[in-house]
Length: 415
Image 1: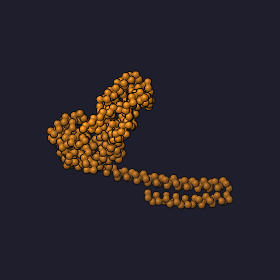
Image 2: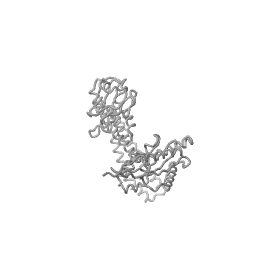
Image 3: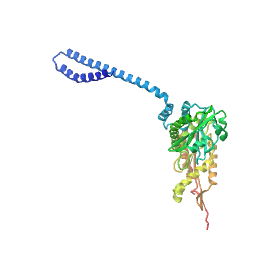
Image 4: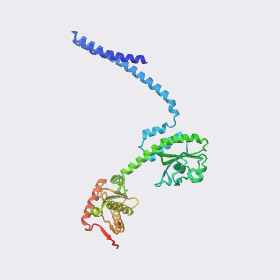
């Protein structure tokens, strides 16, 4: 094939150089127009034939090369059992959330090391206990697993040591934890998940048969842990970035973007069920907040916002959704609430703020007052934007009727 490949190259180059000269000679000759046309057509035909022949040779060579490559690569692909995990890292990277990542990884790991269940354990804030966040497999249910102390059981040991821990006959794990989810299991292995040498989680596998060749399994487990750790780390970053995109960093409340996502969903439900599904929106801001900022400083103003958010939340129903909109404004979604219920919620919030004094300093406290505006579906609007605009308009109107006092101030003087 190689000699013909070079011949095609040479013919294309040679005829490519000759064709312009032949075309020029024919064009300036004293032949009739019919003869010139015939010669030019012949030159074009020959050149097209050479190009077609050369293309066939190129295509034939590429096809032979591709077949040869596939044949030579097939045995190596079958030998490496970690290919599926590496592909997961390449194709999915950090695009999946932790739950989807766990299901994907569990399925791929099960193809490499058959198991009856897998668990993902994560530490609490101070890394003293581990809790089961996700469970996959027929041999385990999430509710059967409780928190464990770091260092207890093979998961706690793996988190503490950073090494693969294997319980070949489940003697350690069953007596250490006594978890009902291991009732049908015969062995277990714990894989520490690491980033820059630090363990940030543990994946535990449960097996239906005892483990005899622990050294062989340990080598496989180490290779798996090395490949799945970046996947879980990337998924955790996705979760945190999504949470950050929908959370106000000052108050830890959902932000305005999250508020509109929830409100639009609730509006869709109200449109679907009509009068059977009432809906109200509250918009509220703190009276005299700018004056408070100037009087006490912006640091105290930030504390006021956080305090207001915490106090408002205590007065809401479990189904209600509280968020910080912008500045000192709070936005509240009240599902299944008509105008009467909205007024009751407003009064509860006012009572809660009236009885909760904010400590400005050791000797000074203030009690907050909120301006409210409420709007109900469908009387005040049939879209999220219309409801919010109506509530804000009513809030502005309520400011004109409010007393001139900015907020209630209590002072204590101590010698």
